[in-house]
Every structure is written in C-alpha cells, then in structure tokens.
Length: 124
Image (cartoon, helix red, strand yellow):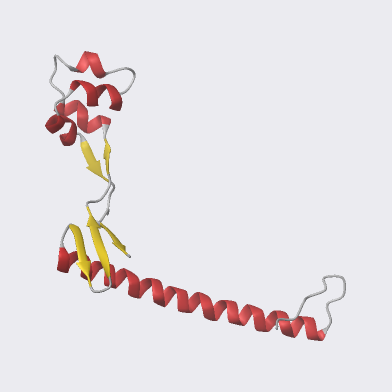
C-alpha cells in the first residue's frame, strides 16, 4: 500500500513516503533503460541473423522490414525526365503527381530513408 500525500499538510511521514516513491521511480527508470538497451541489442542481432521478411521463430514470429522511405522532392528533380518535370512541379515537386506520372522504378529512385534508419524489427 502506498502512502497518500496530503498537499495541504505535508508532514514527515508524507515526505518520507514521497522520497520512497521517488527513489522507486528512479529504480524503475534505470531498469527500463537497461531493458530497452537489451531489447535494442536483441533486435539488432535478429536483424543481422534473419534478414528482411517474416520468420517463424519458436513460439512467435519476427518480421524484419525495410526502413521507411519517403519521397524526396530534391532527389526527384535529378530523377524525373525533363519532359515530365513541368507536369509534376507546382511550387515543389508534388509527390502524388510524380507517383502518377513516373514509372514505379523512377518513383522508387526518388525515395530516401531517414538518416540513420534501420530495418524495423517486430517481435510477436
């Protein structure tokens, strides 16, 4: 049972209870950081071990997906053929117009991953 703090009259018991709660909170934060670090390491190892795709492993499955890619208008300017450019340029290269006007290969060449992005690992 945790002590209830009365903000109207903090006495020594309330302060001690608060100190215990704060100390426990910090312990949990440290535990969480260690858990997250270990989970990150496990995901990195699974990414290297399994490669992209869905893998049935033990009692569950692991999916390793490619990093998210986004359309980059600046990259698109160097990819889009000059005769198509006027059709897809507004004040910036319009992602939806470019997707409709370009071949899938050209559109894919316009996409970039976020800096430092790694394949996504899902564990179920």
